[in-house]
Figure 1 (cartoon, helix red, strand yellow):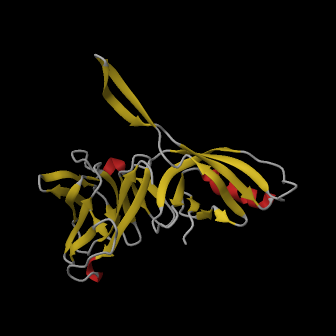
Figure 2 (cartoon, one colour):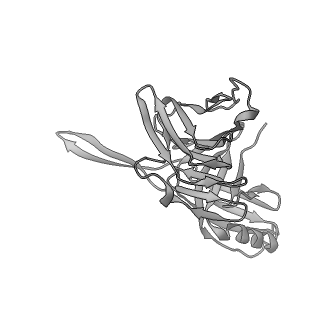
Figure 3 (cartoon, one colour):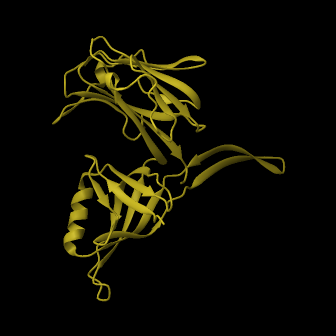
Length: 278
């Protein structure tokens, strides 16, 4: 039997296990959703004008084995920009929520359990999402190679830089694109049966070891150039006549990439399947 699991991920990708004998999260609450409704009276009935999600706070109690483990946790969360990860019981899928620690209380060592019982509040900045990533280097993928992903995803051909996305959600799914150097003036377009939905272009050259990130997720939206030891905002180098940020609509769409260099493109595309609750 698989038990539910919790963990935190910080801005550099390090993970902090919240189901550990030395530091564990107990009595979590706020894992669902809360909505507000605006309506107007029409005769003896009411007509719905608007419904919206309210910002959620995940609460609970972290039990630390010692003050040292409390200090380690405090250091881990000090940079902000956290991701709360939750794997429900008997699931093999992790779900995520962007958050920051809003409140952390510090207790004395309990005389019975010999542990610190510290209540904590995680203020959420996103809905729950399942993150699905497809990645490949073109010349390493055989023709018609299909990735075994739960979110239907396939690269069409080893010589064509396109990704096929099937979004089963009603809402558009935000995409995070990573293009790895060497590459010159990368551009992309999203199409479905109706034609071109969105496109983007950045006038930039990427060397080996550099990458361009175009993130359409609202809480982390950016266009940046990354190296091993630096991050540079290159938003000003993007083509403002294009939408740049990609959201895959419901149904089947194709995300196609182009560039001005002779190198085979190395691409990563992350698509988020968003849900109110999991």
